[in-house]
Length: 245
Image 1 (cartoon, helix red, strand yellow):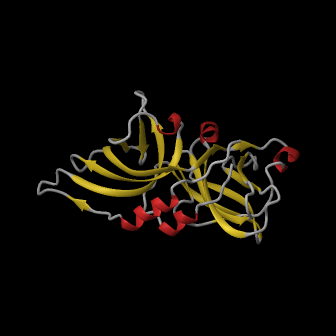
Image 2: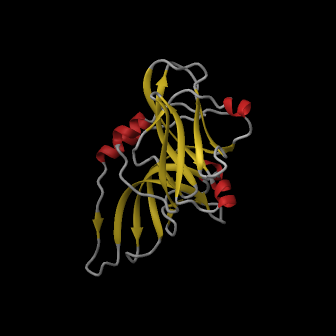
Image 3: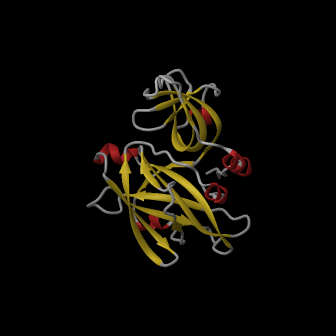
């Protein structure tokens, strides 16, 4: 599988450090403009144009991007854009994009058997409690860190079906392919769990099992059917530099 690398990190950090979030409106509150840094889902409409799913009911149409981003694939992404909301209440936005960077997005895989599951690896990693670790909009997005050497490749996998009593319990697995030394480095990955939702219904929370540096851990994330919005921490973004597949 082709390895994915987050790009333009230094340019993004520079933009973040120089950006200003603001709101302005006229006397009749007929227009508001906002610069937003957000974690969104990029989708494609029937006319072949990409848009941002900002929350369950709100979409942002991209005024300075024509056609399909990322070949029309639905992916999670970090982005910063300027929103123009004509009436101050509309959930159908026009957005001028300053930058956008896709997150490695892949499907959760079903547990098959012990031998197959073992191929996904059991090398240790940790998951941060940053705002980019979130379960929403049919995805589980995880901001993680692990030891990283020079030039190695790593693979991360979300395995479903690990608990017959809870379809929304997952194992977050890591195969370092022997590259287990070096400094701690960060990465971010989004897993599509829509197939599980289609079979089991929408959850209220998800459970993630990991093999951490302190042993086995389990943590829960509240599931939100809408997409969140927040300020991106520049240092966190700069650290998202792990090559994973």
